[in-house]
Length: 307
Image (tube, rainbow, N blue to C red; front, side):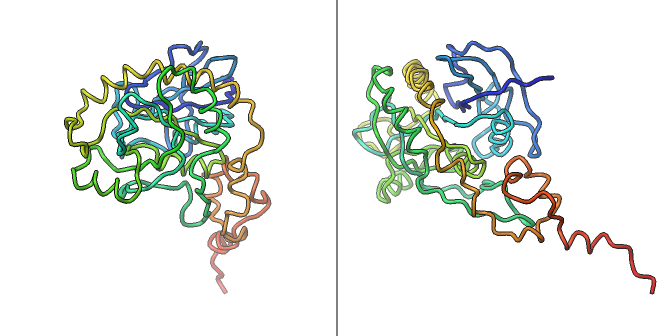
């Protein structure tokens, strides 16, 4: 089967399980060396751009935040040829001026997760990528330039605190996140952003504010019903902004994230585990010499010396 190539990958979440304007021509679920993605990638054209859309929680919202197959999701987009990723996510606000229903294009991340696999790499092949800045600045600019299409407030910048979930914060946690500089709180931007960086895919986020978390003195506690109702009301604005931004995003040239692994692989090429090399070929193939064979592997596979 010939799989269509895409220019931009879009990850949707709570309340944004599809892209109504996407003229879908095919649906594929690419097998990756990290398993299957959350669901089918819906491929089509929107605003003249070849787009692949994937709901990170799966059809019917079956994957909770800590169980999303993030590595398979990111690798699937890489295999489909994506050059850029945009994530749409529901978030709580930690600031008075970021009101429910507003849109935010965050600029930084604060990782408060504890139970998630944060990297493609591991024993036998080690790499250290930078995550500063946490989002692609050129991609952020494209989203912000398209803000008028949303016809609702769009805020430039904000630090997004990422928690494990699936529960919402306690009041003490919410106040703590405000104290340490958080502006928004969500459950999915990490390890998504970090894995995208390892996959050399520029990544930007469009966050939809659905509530005031639980810190606000005059707003009720956050609930699933409230989150979904606010997300549904704002979804059309998020989709309109994204559709307006896509041509500029697709036209972006080379970005720093496109070479994030250059100089990031620390393992000596002669010591790379062949199995890890094979598993990560889509990511590291252009950075590691193909003729290199692990000397340790060769030694381990030698026949015992009868002498």
